[in-house]
Length: 261
Image (cartoon, rainbow, N blue to C red; front, side, top):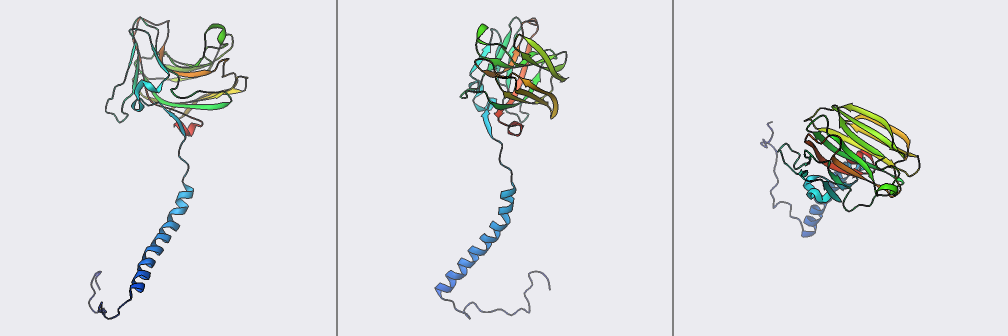
């Protein structure tokens, strides 16, 4: 017999076995109930096995409000930040452009968030520079000036000599290099930076670049007298005769690395 071929199969006339409205309602109820229960039984184990979504505390992507995602934009004239969309699937990105003759162009802080000590912050983003000497591309910047802080920037990252380098800077400007990795200008790189913010020397710094562990520094003082905030962009007073551009995409903040990967 072919599928769909009903020859030779006895058929009952629709009027041969009349049913009451109650019978019909009961049939309809059964038709609704059992498939639903079966579907629930099939879906429930999958739902219980599905991991929780990442807890992004701050979405600093350029498509999420432009430079309003920062507390401030610090660009010395004629430096500027622009937001191109190159139709590569990323949408808008930040282009921090430190012009010839100026020292900085940076996005400072996180709008709408007051950071505190005693917890871990993870920051994730994609980074690309125009040259292999983009100077300072990230600072864990201390609040205040002069005597208001002891460290100024407990964690600092630079692109120098086609390498991404990271330092821990202890009170008294004691610079300790804690990692570096080769860096190719004009290429996107995935950055994941974890800072356990502690005013004692129990803090730590972790850095992953393109999934590779680059720095793992413990016993660090990572929270200054008045606190700290992140800065992204390009900063440096020792190289002002060349334009420096640092493109940044997909900025996020969370409590764990999985929140920002």
